[in-house]
Image (cartoon, rainbow, N blue to C red; front, side, top):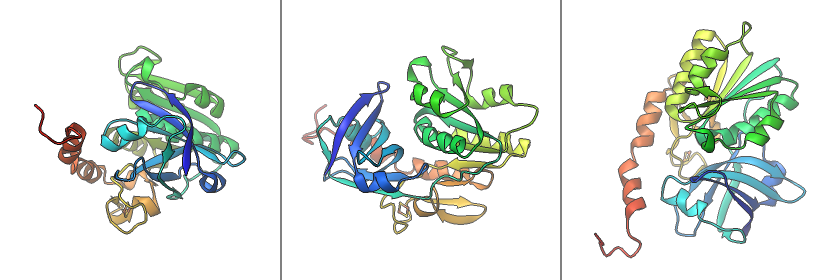
Length: 277
Ligand code: FES
């Protein structure tokens, strides 16, 4: 069983969980993810692997409680067990030695950025991270990022910490005379779309780690279908990272909204289903 060894509340909505998963801990690479079911009856959800300790046989993941299943996951306590956990899944992030790398993350996407930024630095790059949050209190994994990068800059929507604005505005303000050699981006779809549009102008190769709806994580169900460069790709087995300049972000946003009503229904349904209120 995948026992929860540690639980830390990072923000009112975001929780960090360290879980026993020896086989995943031995094999994971930055950019990989797992698929879990927090209870035997739950649907499956993908979660990024933030860290792994092969010696201890554990992995660390971060979950944002925004839907029914993520809320169930975030409600788990130390000592609880996760009945189903499969991984590592997906392709690892593209990590090359290019000199200067910019890692851009928004919201809970910062959790994926941490191991990827660390991998770029270990590969010999100077790594700048630009991260965004709605306000100072919603910034996550600040200490880890400071240790994993050469510089980390924060943007907050309300200006309560760092740059006042979003990550794309901060990128525009930050842009050095010599642009970075490679950019890795992860976060909400509008953010990744705006990053891709800006870095297309800059002429800098950019990878986006996508977050489509996933069901089985094995390339069989088609739930995670995305269009990249006019071709259908499956994010769970061929991604989740793709060339950001080739991704059809409009389609991705449409597909991710397809189950919004069902998700709202599931979130709001009273467990006893007797129609209270
Ligand atoms: S999640 Fe089913 S094909 Fe990718």
